[in-house]
Length: 516
Image (cartoon, rainbow, N blue to C red; front, side, top):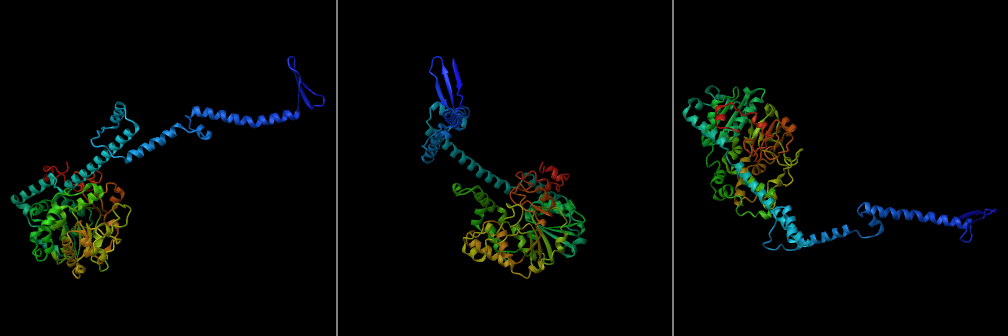
């Protein structure tokens, strides 16, 4: 039995036992012993906790604090090393690749792949998938280009049926406008619109939307110019579908005495030049090295090769002062626009002596649409372009333009346009590729008055994320781009802004199953 005795002087403690001799312990010794234990016990506790955490947390915390190497870290380093080696090794010819990740796992188990072989097969699979995706993207862009350049069956049907109606129905051949209203065609008190197109359905939407959006439709006069093959059908449509009180005139290019080879020599060359015909109508993929271009560049190249860019109808806008010698001020509209607001105030816009009232396209909320400068249209590596143009200069838009024809007739805009077209032809189209806007950007230089952007909203034919609220507020919305609203590739959520002006009750529309 152990006994504890405290000395009378309180200076020592005696511990005695029946089997062991008594021991005297001083208070000082006891104090030092307790002090040492007080320091050691926390460390013992911490080490015990680390061992416990190591077991509970999968050795994530303990090894770092104890300075030990974690197996998972070593495995990760080895894995990165294997991947780096696989990225530099050549892929063997004839290597059979799995079709999916599940097949890869199965092949790894069955064939007992080592880590290096697994990494090499995985790399080969990813590179193959990337090539397949790239080729699919180029095929998609090519198919979309052909879809955008083709004429839908319904629209072709509409043109044929209306042309047949022109030959069999006297009312479809009636004079437009009626004889008593002919003087209005040159009356500058009216609001004159110019529309150049071979698309009857699109023309009907432009005219209907402008008339329905006008507070004074009796002041509207539409001058529609079309080609010879479409003239009869276009005339039939507007003869049979009156837009009274507005006035519509339909004329074919063959009915303008001024449009002779002498007056449009460059455009004659555009339509007969074999190299150009091959460029715009030949294979768009043959000879193209798809491995050295991006889908975006390829899409831009396809768009620049649209056959419409060598169409006389597309270039007619540069001859408006000569084609309408009695008019002073007109608004030119493309056939892929919809008018949503009264455009009468445009005739009150003071152009300050300039010729062309247009919306600039280098500033705006939608950067993908409103970020166009001259560098986007011209090849500034060409010395002639670099000498005369500033790549950072803001571009402006065709599609809705106010033209002061009196001011235009005092300029040499047409001659400048012809001159630069000739230069581009001589350079084998190395100055610019895309359409009629580039030469116009040069020809109208110094003659453009910028109007408020709310008059003309662009990009609905290629920007699917267009702001719907901005669309509703715009005076004119423009489906420029490949995804026209009358095509199946048009954006479904943007189409209703256009289809609301299609007369689906019309027998010709119904019988041709337009946009069913």
